Length: 195
Image (cartoon, rainbow, N blue to C red; front, side, top):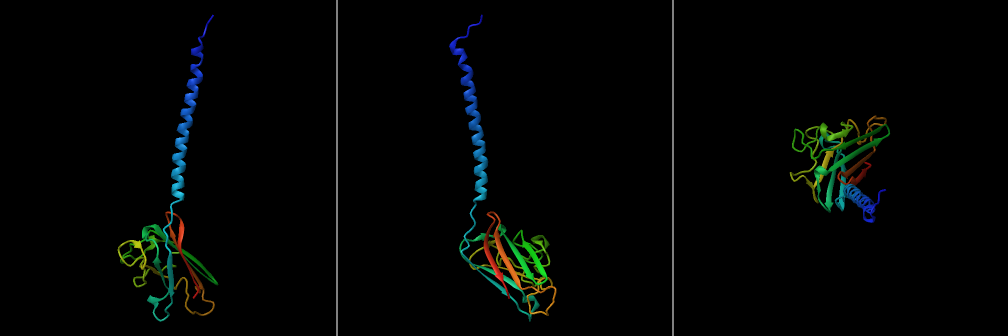
């Protein structure tokens, strides 16, 4: 007949309790690292661009100075140009075109100009010609700061905002320009032009 001492029987519950507590602590630590890291990415604040002004210049006398979009940062925090994308939407009776300007600043053949790699969507909406003011920021700081202007040209062959003959298939009457801060996915500037 086997006789167990009182102290030998208590070892198993104590070990199992210690193991259970250790497993719970390890799981809690793992989950907290995952969730805290995840929420930090979600809650990354957008820069406070307090004020911007938008201009859509239509100059029918000079094709190269026609349909220029200028968005000027007036006040607030500066934004790294690499951290913005620009959504451009043109609409009209028979047109609905959208392009997204990405991987900024442009690094095309001409200084700071855009090329096809900088345009997602309708690549013909934003003009790519040499004299088309395809400049994203006018200096080499790669920051969009107060007083600096983002500038690009809308292609009249895709969306024509000039007074044109009725029934023109490219006739457009509304242009929307949205600047998005990509790390936070927040809109930092939004302009709608109806020339």
